[in-house]
Image (cartoon, rainbow, N blue to C red; front, side):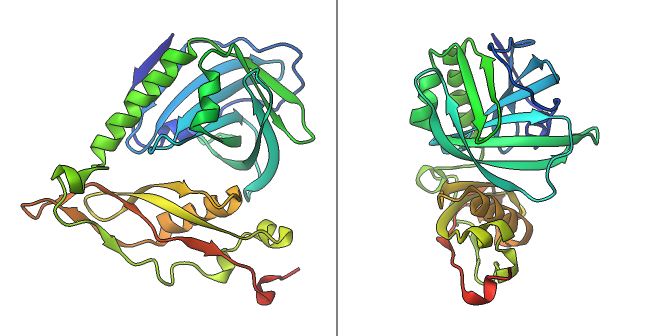
Length: 282
C-alpha cells in the first residue's frame, strides 16, 4: 500500500535522508510502513523507511519531471561529505545489476539533523524492471550491498506517473501549444559559469561533458527547480550545473495572452564542461 499527500516544496528531498550508517545485510530488510508519495511543488517523490541493524534507513524513488529517468535515494542520519562525491555503484531489481554512477552528498533535515545521502540515477526503462520486483539491492563500489524488500511497485509507479502528469500541467509543460503561454520565459546563460565552478574531483579525473537542463520558472522569474534534461554522463558535473543555474540564472517569466506572468519550463542551451591547462590546479 502507499499513501499520497501534499507538502511544502523541498520537503520530500529533505525527508528522504533520515537513517543510520550502513552495515552488511544478509536478507531483504522489511519496510516499516507504507509507501508515502509526496506531491511537492517541483518534484514527485515516494519514500519508505526500513529498520536496519544500525538504525532506520530511508529509501526514496524520485522520477524526473519529464518521466524519462529516476533517482533512487538511500539516506542515513550521519554527517555526509561537505562536497558531493561521485562514486560507482549498481542497482539490482533481481534481474541483474544495473551499473550506475551515483552522488554521495551531505545535508541537513528540516529538524537540523545531519544527513548522508546516496543518489543513483537510472533510466525509466530500467526502473520498469521494478514493477514485479520483490526486492532491490543497491551497492556502492567497495561497500556492502543493501537489500530492501519491495511490494506494490506497480501501483506505486502508477501513482508517481499520475503525480508527474499533474506536475507537467502545473508548470505548463505544453503551455505554448496549449495556449496558456503566449510569451515564453527568457533568460541569458552567457557568463553564468566560471572556471572556479569546475568540481575539483572532476578536474582530478579529467572528466568533461555536455549537458542540458530543464528549468522550472515561477511567476516572478525565479528558478524553482532544475533537472537534468540531457545528462553529460558525469553526475557530479550535472549536479554542479543545476546548482549554478538555481543560484545565478535570471529569467523573465512567461506571460499568458492577457500579459499576466505564469509558470513555465525552459530547456537551456547545451552546457559544456571542458578542461584547459589553467584549470588543472593539482
